[in-house]
Image (tube, helix red, strand yellow):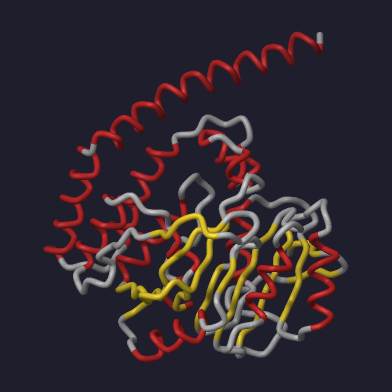
Length: 324
């Protein structure tokens, strides 16, 4: 059981106190007062209205709680939970899914926006084609004022019927992982490890989903990702993000790229693939290792790990010395 404000909630995957709806939207948030109202308004303005909005507040210290409670009081589709302490980004992201009840699930960020037809268009695709596990539209990047910055136009072959082709593009082509904010079949999501407590785990989750079945990209730009100076990720260095995902990893040595590589292999071992597809996927892993920036990052992990180990040793030694 996890404390959430005035009550205790037992977390069982696929269960909430509300009646089951077709679509569940999970909004994990921490100190999101600046853009939160805009994000919620864009969700409540959807032309497809059969959804629940589950908000999990990761012990925010700003006006996030006040904003969420005001919306919850006005719209019965909203269910607001507050963690007694910061659980880390990974657990909070997973928590909104575990509290959901819908046939389809979507993660939402507190600073992104949707066009009114986002849900309707995605539901139509998932209802029409059972082979699609994730449906997402094209993305436009906006600034803190909602003004256009650029279009995101990376195209992946994730609609291929061949798992190895989907796997190749998800690991070998650099992409922004915006698909993670698409609409996902809850049944497929339950077959994955969800968001891991390591840096870049959204990429690994997409790989797991891609090994299950196809993605579908709606050609219109129905999703607006906000790039702004207050984004949490901008205030945390790459090698410090492990603690952002999981506070228990504070001052631990991190190997983020090695972790990603090992999780790719783990996903392949767990996937239901025939021998040919599995062999092709392993060949793509060899290709991934041969890409210059990947082995350079793996090498940098080792260098940074040595530096971190030395720093942690000195920090602990200093504490022992001061206690004497």
